[in-house]
Amino acid sequence: QIHQLQEELNWERQNYERGSKRVQLLQDAVSSLESCQSRLISRIKAWRWEQHQATIGHPFDDNLSPMQTWCEQLLGVNGKLRQEVMLAGEPIPELQDRLGLLLQTLIQSSLVVDKQPPQVIKTQSKFSTTVRYLLGEKVAPGKPVLLKAQIITEAQARNLGQLGSVPSENVGELINNTAILEHNTSSKSTCATFRNMSIKKIKRADRKGSESVTEEKFALYFTTEISITGCDIPYRIQMISVPVVVIVHGSQDNNALATIIWDCAFSEPDRIPFVVPERVPWKQMCMTLNSKFMSEVGTQRCLDNYNQHFLAQKIFDKPDIAGDYSNMLVSWAQFSKEVLPGRPFTFWQWFDGVIELTKKHLKSYWSDGLIFGFIGKQHLHLILKDRPNGTFLLRFSDSEIGGITIAYVAPSENGGQKIQNIQPSTKRDLEIRSLGDRIRDIDFITHVYPDLPKNDVFRKYYTGKSVHPPTRARRSEKEHGGEAVVLFKSNLLKVHINRLARALGRSAAAGMKSNASVP
Image (cartoon, rainbow, N blue to C red; front, side, top):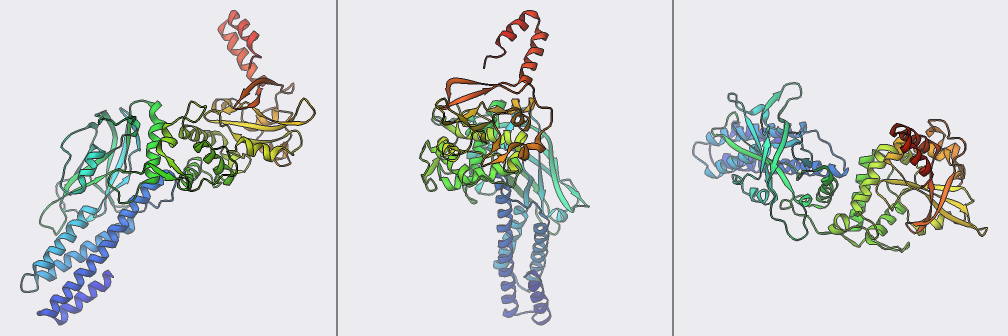
């Protein structure tokens, strides 16, 4: 369309130097330019939205070169049209105003945050961010362009709707908050990189009700004044980052991340900053959990229908195995504020713990389909009840954060069968001995559900020597999550305890030995 526009202009210049026909052609050309630029602005907004959604694992192409070329071409066409209007013989205010507005909009819309800051920022911690100007090659030579960053509140972000409004109150102190716009000839990009930034202090807004500091959203606000070759006046341009949550302690990280996940997943593209719904349909939540799980773990294997169903049972506290939860609404409180029934943690804390465990220790097991994953007790009993003794499956613990347990079929005292669970292995346990080696050590589990010999399936995960004599498991009469639990103690763990005891001295060693077998 740009080429067509230029051809129309050339034809018009050759054949109609004056008259109403020339004005009409100019009006048509400006209208075509408006249409083309509108599509460009929409594409830039879509790029920003896709960048925002990438936080929860959605696909994102970060290549800005095509849009940079588009910006540069539209700027060139705008300049030619302004020249044609000046050569029209008499002023045409309407076209001059339209072209002036198009020029201003293009110049001010070409600033993008190429590399966003981390969305959870701890005070006093260093971070970086990069801002790119898509008309960088058209910046007038001379004085370097200096960009400044400041941190703004959600309320201040809303007031930026009208261009030119500048936040008056400084709500935080940013260190290393200026950067020069520099052109890279090899990549043909013009960027300002803010290195070693940090938030020295932050001023909190008054909170409502039970709102916590980890629910308060801020943003980085970038501003500068820029001059473009061929333009008479400098332009003030501005852009804000995606929302960020500022924390002061690492213990706040998980809850802050929940705020970011909810914001990324459920906000609308053209929202008022940073409005999000209080409730969302479960099917939408489920897609978000699946996308986040796959992207964080780095796997192509998704959460299947069984996993998703149990997650719904968990968040809604509905044990009905046949329930349909797809259209039920999940609240922000259910997701991140209210603790799960009978547990000291929230749904998000529990789910995020599984992500961390799988990412660091179980990625291959999960990707190979060896971990059943999220499964409720009803479903567990349903699929294992007719299996031979020794049949087992791997499931994520629902009783503690970041644990994986082995559920298996065992003989009962009356000659029947029962389903038991080995005490969950956590990140710390798996750092001592891998899951594969732990499975090999346990003699009374023999076949992976439905009926695969465990050594055939897990052989490639065996690393060290098997613990001998064969591992013994002590059964505890107490209930763990409503089911009898087998407390698993390996000889390797006893070795570690004894080593620690010797290091602490004879008296400590005696105490440790006497308690070494206590679960």
